[in-house]
Structures are given as C-alpha cells and as structure tokens.
Image (cartoon, rainbow, N blue to C red; front, side, top):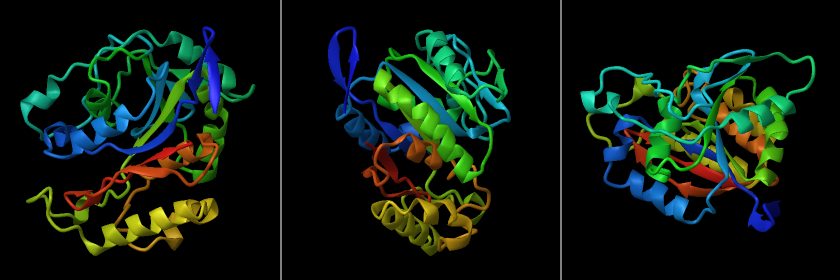
Amino acid sequence: MKFQLSGVQMSLAPALYLSHGAPPLVDDPWWPDQLRSWTSQLNIPRAILVVSAHWESAPLTIGATDGRTPLFYDFYGFPKKYYTVQYQTPNAQWLADRVAALIPDGEEIAHQPNRGLDHGAYVPLTVMYPKGEIPVLQISMPTLDPQRLFDLGRRLGVLRAEGVMIMASGFTTHGLPFIDFSDPHGAAPGWSMDFDQWMNEALGRSDIDTLMDFQHKAPGMPYAHPTTEHFAPLFVALGASSEESGDTHVDGYWYGLSKRSIQFA
C-alpha cells in the first residue's frame, strides 16, 4: 500500500506491537541490535503515535505535543544513569489535532500537555530512532477492554496512510512476580514459552476472537499476565492493521519474558 505526501509516493506506515522491556534494554548485548535491524527495514515515518502499557487513563488523553517536554521516568530502583536519559523530538501538535479529529463526536478527549513520554515509548525509540528527528505523540489507553482497543486502532489506522507509524508498546509476557531476575538470558519458564507460542499461532491464523479472550484461552495464564495492561496494546495494533497476522521481527526472552515484537501490514 502507498500514500502520497508532498507529491512523493511512499509506503504505508506500519503498525507495530513492540515488547519494550525496561530501561536496561539499551545495554543488552542483543536486543538493541534486533531493534536496529528491524528499523533498517522500515521507511522513515512522518511521525510516530504511541500507545503504551504504562499509560492507562480514561477518557483518551493526548500527551505532550512539545517534543522538549521532559521524559516521564515511571520506574524505580534502577541505576541513576537511567534517570538522566534525554529524548527530544519535533513538535507533534498537528498529529494531536488529527487524533482528536478521529474521535467520534460525543466521546470525551482529555489533554495532559506536561505528560512526557514514558519508558514504554522512549526506551525503544532511543534505540530505533536515536537522533529524535521524528515527531512522537503518546496517547493513553482509555480502557483495557480488547474490543474497545481494537475499535480505537481501527480509527487511528487511517493515519498510516498519512505516514504515521502506530507503535503499540507492551510486553508479550509480563509475569514479573514469577521470574528469576538473576540472569537476563537464562531459561524461560514454561508459562512464558507456552503463552508466546499460543500468541504466535493465533496470530498466524488471524484468530482475533481467540486473542481477545486470552485471559481464558491462553496457556500460561495468569502467570504470563497477572495484570493485562502489557498485552492490551496489541489490540490497538491489530485494529490499525490491514492484515491481522503480522511478522515477528524480534523474538527470544529477557529475564524469561517473551520479547516477541510484530509488524502488521
């Protein structure tokens, strides 16, 4: 698929479901290279619209449009260097206006102009687009309901034809209470591998109904997702996609958690 921008024909911007890890992702010996390799295969987007597991707020809330807004260090217990990271990007007011225009009349929208990018957004972006040359806008997840997030993705998906990448940032498995933090590259627990395989197979069948009922149908539950906010962004990406199978561009495990990250056409 193609879109026109300033008389130049370009590829339809992708929709991604991305496992974002944690701030130390940037120091991992393999994960950053996987992300850079993936990015090298993508056309440079006009802008990036991010939905992160770390911002659930109703009604749908539009974050900072000024790319100089300080980042939101929404984590604790890490070395000091992870609290000094900076990531500045061009102004994204035009994208905020487009998002607002896509929300049906009668649905409330909120604005939080001082809310900078959280680590679900900026950690992978500092690896994928380290120069910060692309406007980035983060919006909240107004719900964790898979169908409603899918419907939101359907609305936002039209932005892809305008060169806007949809980045849905979560973690394919996120059973933090049940993992061993002693070795980031140790063996993954069975519940994490089982859930990851189930998700991959369901996506391969484009079985969206089964994916939406993951809390009841997925093996490895509830260990894989004791809370559901890290899987929920997947449904925004699925809704924004034109094909609902997707291609895996990052796989493997980190502290036993699945890093699987997917690009949808």
